[in-house]
Length: 463
Figure 1 (cartoon, rainbow, N blue to C red):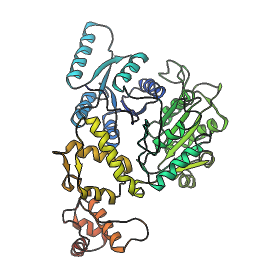
Figure 2 (figure 1 turned 90 degrees about the vertical axis):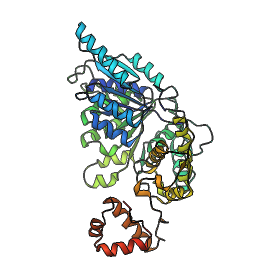
Figure 3 (figure 1 turned 60 degrees about the vertical axis):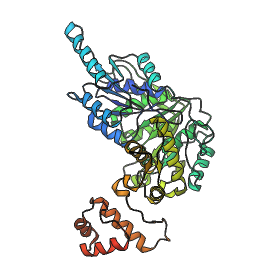
């Protein structure tokens, strides 16, 4: 099995698929210490959802997330991402020849099914770290981000548009301080890269950088992960464990999707940020921490404050400096730069020449709304390169919702006909081309819809 696609220029992402909370905490702490991003899935469905939304460099999966769930997940990964390294982990059943034979059979079946390695619990830290070094050989805890992709940086923010440049300039200006930062923007715009930039340009650059996804962990698990716990604090807490506030001491703690934190957790976060001290779960002893907090959200926190879903005092504490990230459709001049960047990166990852894109395809890319932003663009380029039959990609190779090209412009200087055509196309796509249903939603009859589609040059098979 080849090593992961984690190259210089990428942030390593690991997916852990296991319903054992103690093992999950053990893995998350190891990955955090090495500066590797991780997501935790409790079952096969959650794992598939994570993989549909993002790219991963390595997957750890239990063989028993459900009856044969580990093997079902492995089969799906091999079908969709044949080069992605997968490590299967099994719990040792106990002593005895029969149990040992079952473990050996599981290991053999896992390797035959396409696993790169097979491990048994309990695992020790050194085994996991050696395995990470094997499959993520080019990953480095050192991080850097910049606007110019030609200067050899490890982590590159691609683009030269005025709005992106303004964002980067603001990030670099406030980076040397210890001021809390709130990064806002739609999903897929690159909030994590901006947080890396702030960390790298700060006086804490040599300290740890820890990322925590507040939306991926339950309230109880999040508290234990952030503040740590002492032995016996809860069932399964067989040893004391440091939390991410302690691990990130002297460095940066990036709390992604902060809007998903519960009100209870928000209160504890406020105390930790305000007083620079924490209490481990199960302990009454205060611990001082020196951790810079960077948060990110794709929701409007001020609106959540008005609804009583987010604490106002925490909002003002986090939002001392806000760094807004523009959506991709407001960075029109960056789209073709990103296309070229992803083509070259994926060409190296896949060890194949990058196919050419027709002028019509590039024009569609420039006009498309990109609701998933940069992440959607990267995923689309990857899909096109995987499915391409030859060295040329044309309009027919695009997903159905992109197979039309209207010169839609943004802002208030757009003709009403453009806006109407865009809305009709979006409605048709939402109902998969069902013209009767689309006409009902639009409040017109089917014949009128046909006339408007022809007038707007929309294809008859749109959707």
